Length: 392
Image (tube, rainbow, N blue to C red; front, side):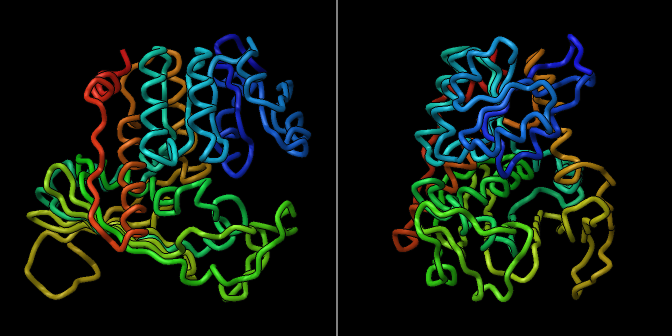
């Protein structure tokens, strides 16, 4: 049952990231979904069964005019984030934008500028900062277990990539820029957070190696029945792809951060298994994660030199948790609701969200221009100071 203490949340876009809206609907326990906007009539028909009493709107502007909404979750397709988020900020609603913040540096900067000029609270949904494995790695690094971090290597094997990202709008670079930005924004943000720095220079290579020649659907035809429930194997047998496929399914980038750390990120969308691997090497050791779900391990080697030792010098287990994304969705909603009500510092950061997009965006320009190095445009110092100061 809703109480007067619940933050009343409007959800704009109820598609693939529905889990974040579900996590926000906790009547009587701090937050409740009171309105949903989605252009798909079939999605709107599901609203009464998901969120009792919630209004269903065709357009986000109708939701923003609803007096029964205090704050909004923006989970629309990536290329609409700028328009929807800026409209919500101008309407005076506290705004949660699903990652990525935008699909270009300019879009991100426009959202930050609007939040600054309106004084409306802006929050970005980089939920990996609330995943147990990431927080464990950050704590071990901050404690000094590997000394001063000097380099980070990230490998991301996306076994379901062909199904999740090549059968809908994600495959169209006009909607995403590319998967190095869209899918990689999480990992780039984690790299920045783990070693406390932002990327200033990148170069990258990437190709559409497998999905470019697979069968596609005609324009304006629905996704296949069983989409995201039935998966084809081997990847070369995939069919019914989006009618536009022009994003890379393999990409790799190198980064130089403002604190001197060197980092590398690799992403493949036709691996047999799904796995995300972080390696951080410092002046006194190395850590690496083995899995990223609750119960997975982070191992630390900080004696040597020696041959490879699988048992490491210390092993730490990722804490158990319940809920989507290893409990991260619930924790990020907790933080957003507290921030929307009271303001103050948060573990997520609009500046960091912008910097992860900027790194991925410039890396995408690099891989499409022969791997040439690109500098990441700095953020206006006025905006940096405002958001680092807690949006006051």
